[in-house]
Length: 121
Image: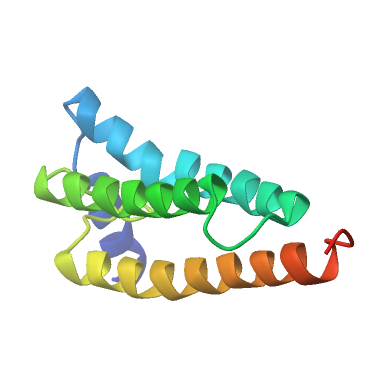
């Protein structure tokens, strides 16, 4: 029953029919995390303070990822990373994991970049 049910659920997943939804999904699932990683490495390397353009860009990407997930869900064509239809509970879980994780990564990158790696100050 479980194997058949999983196969049916996966094949009955939402079909994406609009390019905007594809862009939203790719934003929260692939591009956003990759850009966040690049920004974190840039923050580490720059070590130039807590409120810089890099920090603003980091915040903007986190917001774009949440907006992408929200837009995808509002479209009615949202899916989880494993292909199941997504629900508002999935959205809330995503936000509740993303925000503290991103904030912690940002804080650690700034602490290391500004205080441990920055030998100029």
